[in-house]
Length: 256
Ligand code: PEP
Image 1 (spheres, helix red, strand yellow):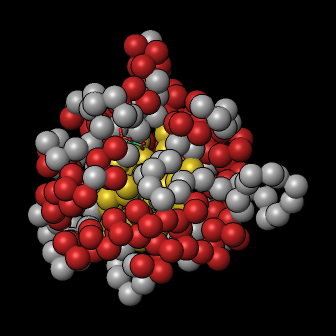
Image 2: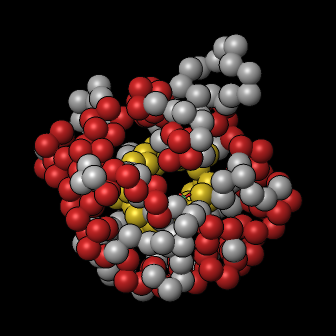
C-alpha cells in the first residue's frame, strides 16, 4: 500500500469513561512507536471528550458513532455536530447498518448527516452494505449504488481526505462470517466505479474500508485485497490484544 491504511474501531455501546481511557492508554503505550496506520477510536458519546484528551499530542484519531443533522433544537436524546466538534473529535460514523436496521435511519437522514458533518469539517465514515437477502437475490450492486447516490446526493465534488467509505456487508457484521476476498474486491471495485461516475477521476482516491468480522486471522489477507484502504472493526476493536495485533499486521503493508 502506498497510502497509510486506516483502522477505525467502532466500540458500539461498550466501555465506561474509565474503561475507555484506560484502554486507549494501554494501546498508546503498546503501539504508538510502531504504528504505520491511521488509527481512529470511535467510543460512545459519553467518552469522547475524555478520550480526545487522553490522546492529545498523538496521531490517533477519535470519531463519534452518530450525530443529529440539525444544529440544535427539541430533539430529546440527540447530539449535534457542533456538540461533537466541541469534544475535539475529527470523524463521525454515519449510516452504520445498526443505525439503519435497528433504529430505522433512512438514506435521506444519512444524507443530511453527511452534509452536516462536511459543513462542520468532520470526516464522515459513511457505511454502506447489502443484507443477505440482497446478496442472494443479486441486488448487491444495486443496493450499493443506491446507498451511495442517496447518501452523497447534493455533493458537487468529493475530497478523498474528507470522506471515508466503509463497505460493511450486513451479514458479516458481528457474525464471525467474513466476506470472501473475491466478494470484498468486487464490492470495493464497484464502489470505486460508482464514485468515479459521480465525481470523476478523484472518486478512485476515496478510501474504502472493509468491515465485517475482521480479526487477527483474516486482517493480513484482507488488507492486501484490491481497493481495500483499511478496516472498520467492531468486536475485535474492544479487545486490546486483538486490536493491537491487527494494527501491527496492517502496518507492515504500508510502504512509505
Ligand atoms: C461494525 O460494527 O462496524 C463491525 C464491522 O463489527 P464486527 O467487526 O464486529 O463485525
